[in-house]
Image 1 (cartoon, rainbow, N blue to C red):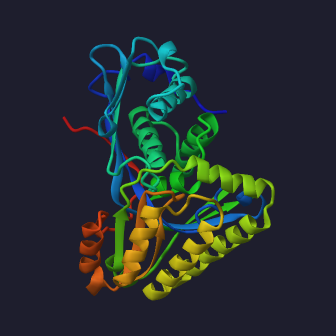
Image 2 (cartoon, helix red, strand yellow):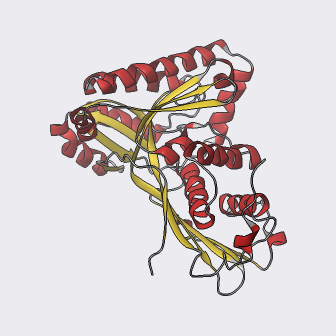
Image 3 (cartoon, rainbow, N blue to C red):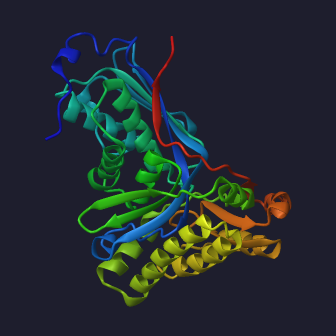
Amino acid sequence: MTPMLDRRKLDTGLFDARLFDVRSRAPLRLGLAGGGTDLSPYCDQFGGAVLNATIDRFAFAHVTRNPEGRIAFRASDIGGEESYASFDEVGLEGGLILHKAVYRHVVETYLDGRAPPLIVSTTIDAPAGSGLGSSSALVVALIEAFRVALDLPLGPYEVARLAFDIERVKLGLAGGRQDQYAATFGGFNYIEFLPGERTLVNPLRAPRAHLNEFESSLVICFSGQSRRSDTIIQEQIDGLVAMNPETVENMHRLKEDAALMKDAILRGRTREVAEILLRSWAAKKRTAKGIATDTVDRLFELAMAHGAWGGKVSGAGGGGFLMFCTDPENRFRLIQTLNAAGGQASSVKLTFDGAEAWTVPR
């Protein structure tokens, strides 16, 4: 049973504006290998494994008392704003559903139905449909803000699982499991999704020199296309439910590549990482239609013609961000080439901290 918040806290000014002013952030991630094997029913039957790394792009949240006495939700980066006079008006039919779903869960699960008048606001360092796990990172950031504001009894595995349940189960949004755990734990992780709903997050203990070399080889490039991943993911799920031999076989290959890439990173073999990226990209494109678009293919071919060793799309595909490995000496030139062709390319830094929240200093 989920514990309610101590009623004495409710009755002694917990919702005082001076106490309820918390910010949080959760990192976005690059999906390096194994993406798709964290989908049911594949991981339920065969076990899934992904390799991902968080980067210096974040989802931010701020939870503070609303002096107007209303419940308000804001997403400044997409121009969204909603305001309600009472909790009964806060539905999940549309709009800022991630904000509202987290708020409703906290009120119903921990606050015995008492709904404080708050402003819940967010921003994300990436466009919608980026393929960087931004929606899941947003849910994690929101949960983390409430966890600190209310001193909720949630560890990192529980935060990640709750984020998954809210996004995938309660709201029914298509997707896998890796994004919630990447955003919560942060860092370079090999994550296993085992039968029986078990998840193991294994941080890579690679020498810093190996991680620095890998980071120095990385180029990310936004294709300019924000994609809806639900159609692609649903086609993958349909193939898995039907046990389509091609879909299942390519998922097996993706899982194998996650383990091989983990070993390559640990040994500092960046060229080998790039080769696995290429192989995984080919396997991923065979799991569903629409993963590669004309724009993605054009940018990908351009990068390969200008010195990229290998690459793939981060996330489900259909647009979003591409990632490439190249000789660090060629990185600046590759970024220039992609930008001149209409991409939005840059270097990127790995990060090693997960979701965090703090009370705003006064």
